[in-house]
Image (cartoon, rainbow, N blue to C red; front, side, top):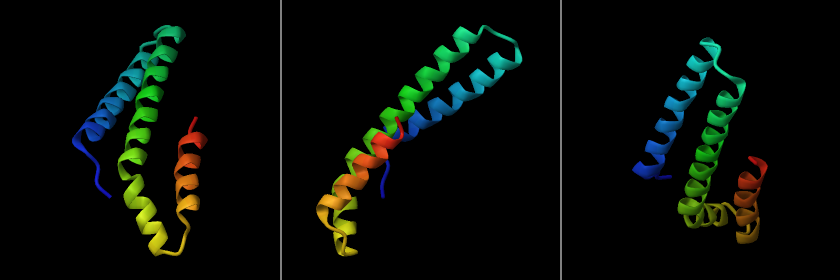
Length: 86
């Protein structure tokens, strides 16, 4: 499975944001500001997951079909991954 550089950069940016949130917490910053940052991180991760599933859907379905799993089951599995995370 391949991952494009934009997704990798998005994950790295989220990692940096998480470190920033930890620092905010250690410094005793306002709860509202921390939750705002966590919400932004969640949105970024959700988008990265969507991109990964979308870009690799054809490959994943092909691989699953080779393993004897129907196309419909493979697509449903991808949908379940996206929906479960929200």
